[in-house]
Amino acid sequence: MTVTEIKPRSGVAFRVQQGQTLRVIDPEGVQVSDLLGYSAADVREVISNGRTFDYEETIALTTGNRLWSNRSNPMLSIVEDTAGRHDFLLTPCSEATFRHFYPDQPVHRGCFGNLAEALAPYGIEPDMIPCAFNLFMNVPVASDGKLQVDPPTSRPGDHIRLRAEMDLIIGLTACSAYASNGGSFKPIHYVVEDAASA
Image (cartoon, rainbow, N blue to C red; front, top):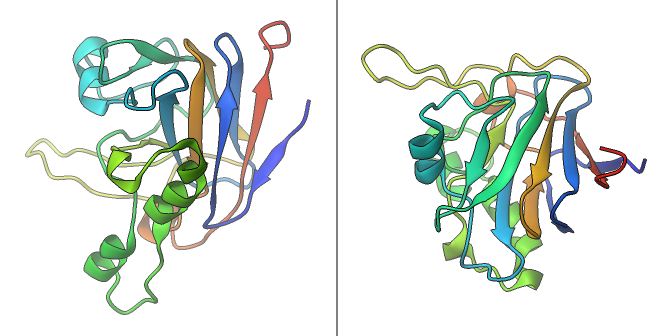
């Protein structure tokens, strides 16, 4: 089993074949990872939070739920989740995010910029980046609909395993936003497992 590290405030892209399982690990705890999925057959087919909320009938996605594409096809199935709390409401952080929320901090290209660079070799342009599935991100929704970004509740070693339901191009980050990660930035680990070993 080969574990790959994503360094703090960076991102990667890679292929996952149908039936393989992607395990994303928070090795030190309290660190968000933005996940995107595109169909390897046609990158215009992409993960969709709206379709997912519609078909899964929940915003609290965890073991047993599927992540759907903009074409209403299942892309990923959550087969194991030790963290139990993720976000699919908020967009990847970007230079604009930093200017808006952190005017006293240096501007960073954020997850959006990291994903754009990592996905470019696959023919995926910045305008093709949707809302990501924000692994380990803690976004409580109040009864009045107000959103809040709290530190992740993930502990060291917590992970989520997702089975690919089609051949995919995955974008994955170690998130760069201060509030999302409790004010510090740590690595993310991931493993791609074949069906026989998953």
